[in-house]
Length: 202
Image 1 (cartoon, helix red, strand yellow):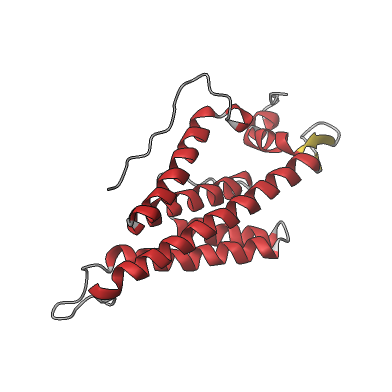
Image 2 (image 1 turned 120 degrees about the vertical axis):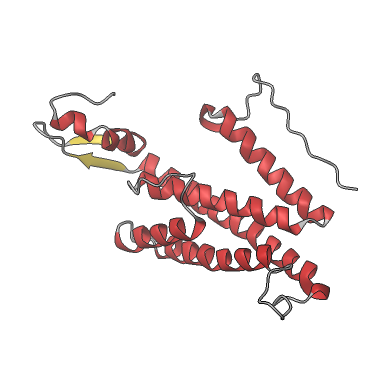
C-alpha cells in the first residue's frame, strides 16, 4: 500500500540553504515523492515530478542569463533548448549543452509515456502495448530521476563558479566595477535605473 510522504514544514527548521525555506521544503518533498512513487510502483507520478525538477533548474540557469522565461508558461523543451544555446554560445560549456540536449530528448519520452497508456489513432492500439507499459514507464521514471541528479550537480557547480569568479561590469557614467558574480544578476535587473540616473541596491 502506498504511504503518503509527509515533510515537516515547521518554520524553525534550519536545513534550507541560503535561507530559502519554502524552496527547500518543496524540493525535499519532490525528491521524497519521486523516490517513493518509483518504489511503490507509480512511475507516472515520478516522471511528472522529475520533469518539474529538471525544468526548474534549467529555468534558473536560463533566467540568470536573462532569458526572461515565465516558469508557469515555459516547457521543459523550451528551457532545455535555451540552456543548450547559452552553454554553446555564451558560457562555452559543452558538457552543460549536452546535458540540456539530453533533457530535451528525455522530454519526448516523458510525453510518450504520459499519453501512451490509452491514446492512439482510431482503430489502432497504443504504441506501447499494455503488457509492457508499466515496465517502460518505470524505465522512463528511472532515467528522469538520474537526469535530475545530473542536472542538480551541474547547476550546483555553476553556482559555485558564479560565486568564485569576479565579474567586471561597466555602468553608465562610472568606471568598471568588480562585482561578485552573485551580485551580477541583481545589477542586470536594475540596469534601467542606471540609465535613468538611479542606483542599484548594493
